[in-house]
Amino acid sequence: MSNKRRINYVGWLGHENLGDEALFKAAQDLFSSHQLIPVNTEWEDHSLISPVTLVGGSTGVPEWFEWLRPTKYNYIFGAGVKDPSFYGYDYIFRERLKVAVMLDRLRLFRRIGVRGNISKALLAKHGIASEVIGDPVLSLKPTNLNKDEARIAVCIGSDGILWGMDEGRLFREIAKVCQRLKKEGYEPVLIPFWRENVAVVEKMALKEKIDFFDKWFDVNSTLNFIASCKILIGQKLHSLAFSAAAGTPFICLEYQPKCYDFAQSVGFEKYTIRTDRATEGRITQLFTDLLKNYEEMQRELAGRVETYREKQRNFVFRICRDIEMSPDILWHCPPIQRRIKKILWNADIKLRRKTTLWYAWNRLFFLRMMQNCI
Image (cartoon, rainbow, N blue to C red; front, side):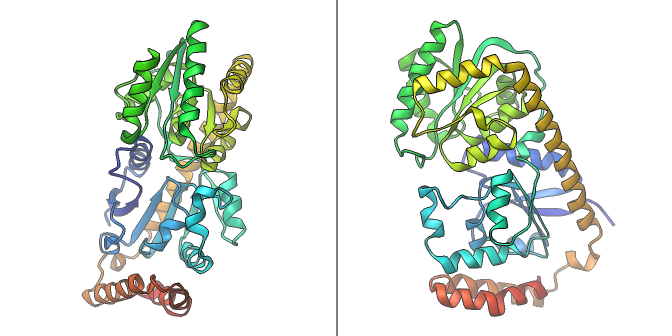
């Protein structure tokens, strides 16, 4: 039996977001004995591509499970869980029955590996077991190991949904931080992590006369550049993950709870500040404190990252063992089963418009049928 099995890969791909592209690259490297097939469309019938689905990284738990079609073997690989205490996630948790359906479908997963301890605790509240394996980007490794003691990477920009809901104010404070760093002999360099943020970051770089890293959308180039920096000051979650993977201590500008979840996972919660509380003075104080403890924190970071790399390799080994031990018949879906699955899924889509009926359908019929037919 060939080991080269196809696996459905669920991620936020195709949006020119460097973090999500890096997650896919990390998963491809770790699952090199298998072929990952991206699932980018909500209603795409990925269950016909492969009986195995991998939710790779990103912070899509639980809302992705409203549209994600379950397969026979389902896994979560390093994803984050949305925290309902954040007002930006209110739309997800507003309908109690809809959330219950999402959580029910999570229980079809054979193994759930999450980004950090906060994500694990959020699932545990609902009786869903998981294990912390870290963000998959941590498995990426730079080839550049030389640091420029004066270079400081600064990543700003988000989707605009952040603590304080005033990204303009945050940018003004970061501009002050960059000017202060320049006066102290440092060389700040602005890095976007998403195409949507490029224009505003370039504008700030021009206005403040700050260098701009224009190779930002290349995973290896960005990872190596961050590895060459003394410290990273980062807003986007995966700028922090790149920094950790590159062995560069960082200051986390927590725009959403997922950033704190990651920072805590690698021992950097002390160097985290929420965007609604971030000022030039507070960020500069964190920078000064990090410099004082630099070697200690760098060792701490390296140790945590290596631990997660080992956990991820072990997690992948267990998934691959499941796949390789699966019966050959699983990979050849009979036409009748395909038709049944299509009928079930189309009915499910229609029922979502009526939450109470959808909840009853899910509990009494859909899950059992899908488990038997998939």
